[in-house]
Image 1 (cartoon, rainbow, N blue to C red):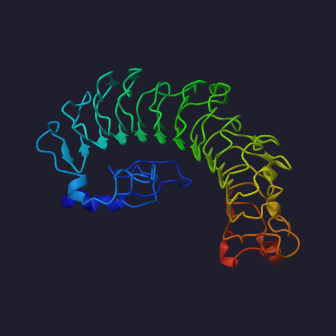
Image 2 (image 1 turned 90 degrees about the horizontal axis):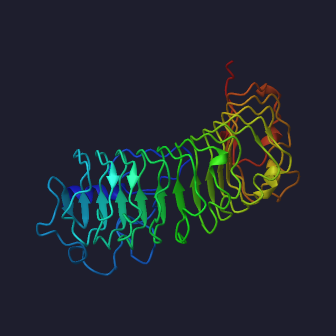
Length: 371
């Protein structure tokens, strides 16, 4: 008990711009909430509760029903790092969190999760799963979090539970996103599918129809352009570490609700004039490690933009109006981060007024350029 309670505070938000990397048992939550949140706050934590009851009443100790070698308490069944080749039996029906990561499981069969109607989070990271029965997830009526990254899947599993809120399926072998694979997932708000060999042609038209995602990451793939027809509800879109070469005028037209856009570590040479005008409430823009020769046009018109990463490009000149609008009171939020280091810019020629809408000079990161 003491060991588990010490781990609870480690549940935290993991929605930064770097690729997601799970490092431990508790390092897989995107939540920024209490360790044991109320049930009515959907997807706000790992443990759903009814609220108001004592911990001993809500999370009773198991009297003896626990798979061999596993640790079972607080409705958590932890069976990681055991060399398991299949999903164990004798899992209590009131289990909320089942951790099976770092094993040797190759297949999810039809009855592997039979009777686990209360399961809220299922962790299958770093196994060798290649096959999932079409009805494997059928009993999981309350599943909200499915983490099945670092396996050998070649497609998104069919018939995912309609209750699902968060899907982590990065670092598999997925090359195709079928049109109907996300049908009925009206509660889904987060998908992490980076680290798969996905090309632009791998997205069937309408693959994301009906989804109301807030967060989508397709980093470390093989994209050469911004995918078409992604959900227009997105607040965060991460396409870092791809092979995107240009941002054309209509690439971002659907994404007027974006707060954060990650396009770092691509091959972007050109951002067409007017492209950024479709992002009126953008707060953060990552364009570092590309091949831009100038500051993208349109930044002064983004009134809420606060962070811009432009380091490690080929920018040779910075104009006095590249970042800030002309006149006072136009910009609604000051910059608190502009990175420009690693560019062949003669920084002594940059006029101080260029950054008149930044919080202070410490917000501007210059640096030496090395060929």
